[in-house]
Amino acid sequence: MDKLQAMRTFVRVVEAGSFSAVAHEADVTQGAISKQVAALEADLGAKLLTRTTRSLALTDEGERYFEHVRRLVEEIAEAEAALRTGEQQLTGWLRVAASVGFGRRKLMPIVQAFLAEHRNVKIDLRLHDGFIDLVELGIDVAVRIGELSDSSLVARRVGTTHRMLVAHRKYLRRLPAGLKPPHAPEDLSAHNCIVYTETVSRNEWSFTAGPGSEEPVGTRRVVRVQGNLQTNSSEVMRASLLAGMGIGYSPTWLFDEELASGELQRLLPDWEAVPMPIHLVSPQQRRHSAKVKTFADFVSRQLGTPESST
Image 1: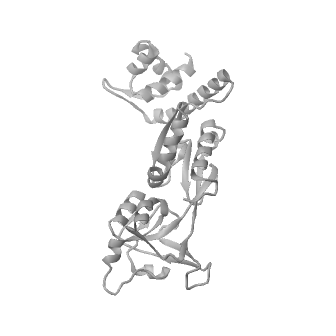
Image 2: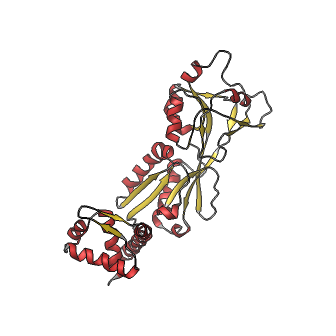
Image 3: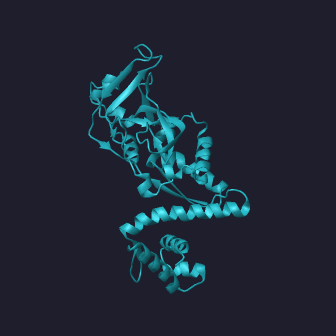
């Protein structure tokens, strides 16, 4: 058995979703493709695929094996392309992860521009709010907002994101008699605050006094807030704020249009929220990937500079 070819065949079968499609691509019989995968399973001593007359699916062992072998097959293809042409060619899949809000509103235009410039690259964009294991999911590069805690990852800072205290004008119009919009951070204790649970601070919101504050510039305040809704989804937080359900502590990019139109209002403008760094992170084994480096360079340029703000 040509093990490398069997690995390539296995990867293509999973990507295509059928033996017949791969057989058609290779101009061989379906039985020949099935035999290659069966031989690979026999060599590994593990069942990789479950087959029915209408579909096939990865087993748990097959899913783990696929993520590793797909990357290996692609790296070999890149190396062979570079040898043939005398220069490094970017081809194949790049698996990128980000939070849902940042992915939809900031990263998607960058991905679109990157694909237009690199026609032989394909991107698998995974959007998750919350922690994900990059190695387990086969992610090549992920956007992480906030301070990093996983020192095993290779990190590159590509920008800074700023937050502000915001509320919809519907919430402000519906305030009970005697309750006014917050004038100082401690006033937030009387308000319904929507908490995003995927930050380290959660319901402890930090502020620094700016030039217009009644406190000395640089004075820090940390307030513990509460409300009737908390969520691990940036999209739920966005929807609840736009529905006028409460006050949020949000990245500015999540509400660019609504802040510009005045639909959403900034509160406590004389108190600055603590900014958060934006990093691109990759597993150690992807630190030499040409695709990862090129994508990281591209993202950094699109965001402006390694210290750019968004």
